[in-house]
Image: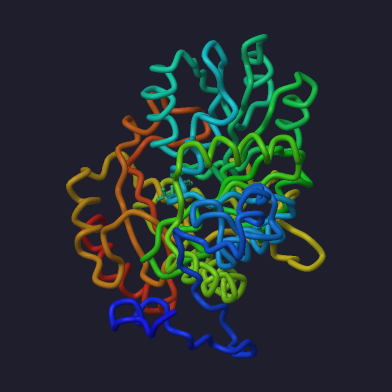
Length: 399
Ligand SMILES: Cc1ncc(COP(=O)(O)O)c(C=O)c1O
């Protein structure tokens, strides 16, 4: 072949980086196209096998590494990455449910998960019902011939009830129904979802694994080979890949996650303990605190010989007394200087969001006191500074 011209030489240059460049972090493998050495190799390649590569959407060294680390973290065997935590929830529904099936959701489910059931799932002929996660009888009474999947959250979104996971999954198993946990709160650290009898664990990596408040990603972990393939095939057909630089960011974040999680847990407990003593506070919703709904279940799942104080995510809610006007609670939130107004959790910056109790829970359950609910997500700031910030802002509700 003659010497290639410059445009060709810029693509087909003979230099090849030698093997052996070692650095603490994995290189970022970015690809849609993967080159095959021969047509035989191309024809024989099966995208489902993990001993080679086919196409960027089906996996790269970066995504396979992240998937296997997440499967180990959660005590599972297989993992599928999705572009957000919510898309992981959606994928589980789309992979496992068919027209005519019914899915059960806890009454404290992540809001968009319920919206998905009311929207697309209903549109595809899949019905849903809501059970009380603190009452296994409520779940039992709803299980029927059409029930195919039960979602669980521990602790639940916003109102933070911790359910008896083992009792709920035992009911699912007895009925031959699959169970899937949104394990974002536990992050694979507070308890092992598969030891609790779950079939699927979904994780919004956007929260603690990222830790930066800057990356969106989700994962679906299973132990069962057949279930894993069903999810992989559905995921492949929908084409929802994840970006290489995002995978690298999560791989990096995972390494410091256990330290951050434990630190944010301790800071959150310090801030929650301070708020609990305030005159305007009617109820603290933090599963590690005595009196919080499901506290005994939290103890039985999250306290262990290695974590005698138990582990909990750095997120909790507070119910301010109903006689305080809601405008004052809003003023408290807006008066905070270090806490910022924003959704999400697990990042470096502390966040606060007031919620309309009526809009997240139609009818107030007996274990929740009436009032104005505010959710606090604790970041990596010094907790004493956060308490000082709260002290100055609490004037809005105290006066
Ligand atoms: C419990 C829970 N699950 C899932 C999600 C969805 O994660 P993402 O924002 O990555 O879609 C969130 C986000 O707030 C969440 O709080």
